[in-house]
Image (cartoon, helix red, strand yellow):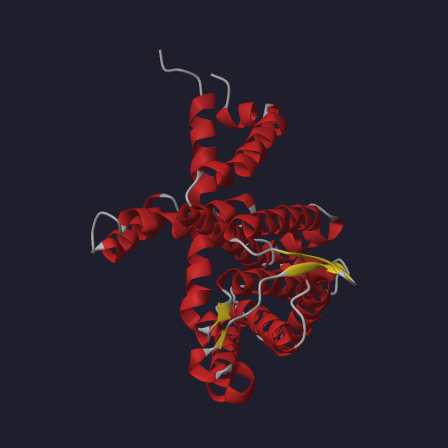
Length: 326
């Protein structure tokens, strides 16, 4: 029997085109609640894919990735409330700010490894959480920053305002597609292949003349930039940003997305974001014990699908490609 994965690759262009058309049509037929839900999925898919650059491709288990998610949101909140909400201005500021934050944290974190690296990144994220709570004049304290203006885009007097959830859905969709394409180009480049080599055997890559610390530093910075972008979109979407965006539970949630989806694939973490954001909404409409059900789903994935959704699809493809028993 022909492999399901082979069929997918053969029809990949058409399946992708149909999927894009469906995503464009979707907000025209869905309720405002469902539009908001899928907008969140796009935002968290970018967040999950950014962590996958570290966890799946570089072998860096960061438990403080929320630091950059929250940093992107707070920079946007401060600039938009005090200066302008024009994305031509706010976006570069957030990306540069996220890159600087990642450079500073990465400079120290990447001098450690293993559990020490994980704990350092967690501590950095919790440090940002503490700053967000205490620096009331800038961050709004425990209340966060509310009333973030709707995003605008334009030059001079020609400015367009994304004033509805319907309009922002397309903003999030476009950013998701661009981020996915950029990260895909990155991981399939010589740089991406070097990262995979470092993850597999760092000592061998050093022996071949690669400056592995520099490669990991670049990966850490780029991951921070994409995480900052997702926090930027999340703050625009909610018109509010709170200290919880820095908290360890946010880092844990995005790590679950990567693990359930399948690390080292980009598509996997995006699918993980779909499951982790949509399933609680669906299950909670039927039972108040939805937390227990979600926990059970995660446990089942760890036990029976350790390679995530992508691993399951590959396994199904291998089974369907095996010869029939006589």
